[in-house]
Each structure stands twice: as structure tokens, then as C-alpha cells.
Image (spheres, rainbow, N blue to C red):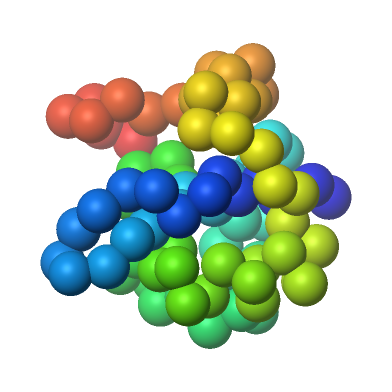
Length: 88
């Protein structure tokens, strides 16, 4: 089980955000996100948007810190990438 998170560098709604992904399955991703307190509405097609204040929680829980380009590469290689506008 490996989850990955990029730095909170994405602005939105008055705060900075990270992206949390799994390279195995969405089920793994949903379970991990729930364990750190991320609500289901934070799921955005193939990742969770994680607010800056929850970043350290994700890392403490085992998420591996990677860059934003690595997030995309990992999703594509795992076959889990869902570009915006594409159905699940």
C-alpha cells in the first residue's frame, strides 16, 4: 500500500492544497483519505484535494511526499488517471 502526496502549492478557496493519490486502487485511496479525516467530497476524480493543514497528517499516516509531476506520472502508470471531463 503506497499513497502519495504533493506539496500544498495549489491555491483555492483561500488556502493552499495538495493532491493525494494511490498507485494501487481508488478503494485504497478512499480508505486512507477517510483515516486522515478527508471528506468524500474532497475526491476529485482520481485524487483527493487535501488542505495544507491536513498535509502533515497524511505524511504521518504514511503518504510519501513527491512532486506534482510525479503525482501525474504515478497515476498514469497505474492506469488510474482520469482527466477532467472524462467519466469514471
